[in-house]
Image (cartoon, rainbow, N blue to C red; front, side):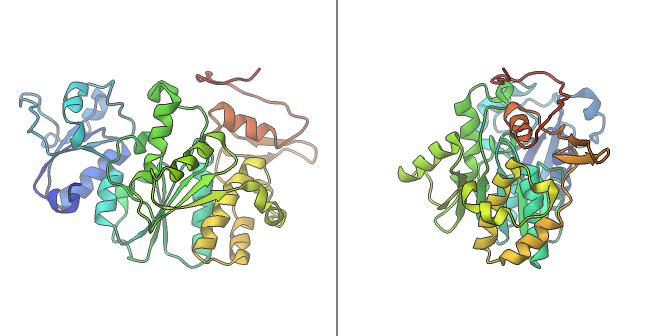
Length: 347
């Protein structure tokens, strides 16, 4: 494995994809005096890249031209402008997650992935850890690029929401605590098969050691299969099998209406298990949960009057997420739109 933290300085690094994470990566690499090149397939986005950083195709893209390629999550390396170059240089592809880890190995990192519930679970964890007095940062797929963090306290807890798109290309990223909430068919237009999708998700576990912790859903058929891989010694972290049915007594103590849906029972079961491993008292956890205000467009309650409650769940963009939401209510008038995804079965 390359020692990235020592090799980045004065090396030629291509940033492929210049949205939020790409821009944050540029700012970070400038500080360590890397030789930076940037590219985005979108001509409009390329106009925002300063000329001195823009990849010049008059220079031949030979295999030894670039030392590292930082690929943004939105780039599909099999269907992009530089696909041939990337195919020949796969071993050089890394992500912003890899860069962050190699410069912040002493921080506690909690990473969360899954098909549904990632953002809510991450926000719940953030609320609980802050209530318990931990210096806490929430970054990643939820909106704040991980490399935008500055001057981290060594005792800070970093909560990272990671998607399959981010994990697919990661080569080194290691979490002290890694969570796979659930898996159901999604993003098939990118991954093509469930096997590819699952393989991307389980990379969150791949680089963990025996000192680390992993959390898998005992109530999900796909994550139950991953649990079987621990018996084959494919992963080395300490495994916690999370069962939402075992926390129902605690769940009844939650008075926050936002959290009373069945899908939040699953999210909270993971929060409770992680909080316990950090020795955060249950009463502190409950205080944080009961004050939690929720996230926009995720089970957002809009009371119209005493008889009608409107639930804005427009962030539920796949069948499984919508299905779990609908199971939490009765007498439903469902307003739905958009295009079906491969694997959706509504009827």
